[in-house]
Image 1 (cartoon, rainbow, N blue to C red):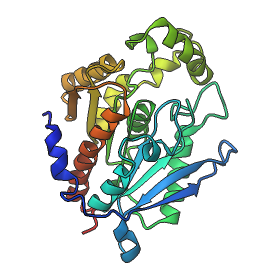
Image 2 (image 1 turned 90 degrees about the vertical axis):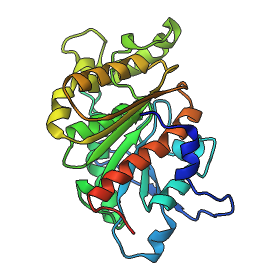
Image 3 (image 1 turned 90 degrees about the horizontal axis):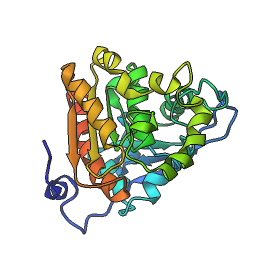
Image 4 (image 1 turned 135 degrees about the horizontal axis):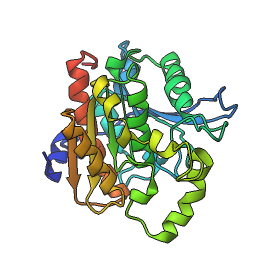
Length: 291
């Protein structure tokens, strides 16, 4: 069901006079696997400093060409994550995924091990640094574009870590021939994809093997809660529709929305509160919220 934009005024704070005091840490999270020094931003709700409780964690992934700080710097409302962290008593972590790391362990580029990095090294660092619920019942993940692929991919391959996953304008099919893009854009992205997945059309087909749209059987077996949305003007709309079609055909419960918009920060700023509300209801059912 598509919810009206007015709904956001109900789930975000109702008075402009209310101050948000969420704290943002920039945390060094080095990767032993890749022998690289990387960072993450961690948004802690105001209540965290006054509490002894363990908190649920939302892992929020950035898109291709971006970096870990995008969700704090690129949204029109620079306080969006602060508001959501405070409102829902939620730790929000935005880790580094490189400009085109794909959130996967590349079969051809041995220093691109972002599946290992996010699923193992980042989660361990966050759990060892903060008071978190160290269980899948208190851990959720979503992201935009490349990060949407990453969230669904990591959750599907690591159901022991996440109870729910989402994607906003996600790259559900890594085969860029399925996207609505012109030849110039295809020429620009082709080398980056070849670096981590080899040449499109070669054997073995790493594009198909690592595409979420081809992981429906595994998604069904996992039984995680899923939220998927994409703008009708987005160049990635068709792969999202195809994933939705396959999920429906296989009777896999999920929340799917198309709404006006393209591949823009305005769209993702509007989308994220829906995801957080969706996740909060699941965390409540799991008994994994801070009152």
